[in-house]
Length: 113
Length: 117
Image (cartoon, rainbow over the protein chains, first blue to last red):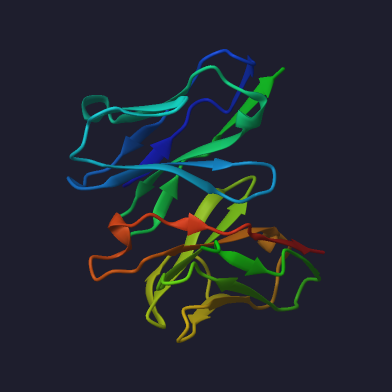
């Protein structure tokens, strides 16, 4: 069975702190894709990154960085120098065998000024 | 490019009624997927349409159905509404290729919040 676990339900930090959101996945597929989405209070899921299972290079985009480790089935997301606008629910997702996204339960990040 | 649009944004219905939600994908996208989001179950896949055909289906009862038109716009219908159908319904679009939804990035709309009383 395919599964995504985001063990952190809620995280609260003060602005400018670094924060890491954890994501652990389970799949028997050898080829798969992993995603991160951000859901602000408005409800829309905003795409952040897609990573395929053959590319274990870490990626950095501005204050965002992602660490993919196949050996531990993890795809963690770090926000450096967090800002109030980063407050949202963040979802990690795995592309299932049918192509649908299998989501974790999400991590609610609150960044306080 | 305009993003995925969904109408209506909010809807209140009573038990037993039926409802139709609409989704317009990003221009050029041919695949449309629907997801249900509830506090208890999280985000769950309903179905995916590609070229006017349902290509994939999640584990939902037959009361949930959908269709896709030749312009890739999609509608989702829920018949005989139950209280548990109260949720945020999200539509996502992707390019739609022969390789399948599996390898594509799905872009989401703002959702339709459905409240069943």
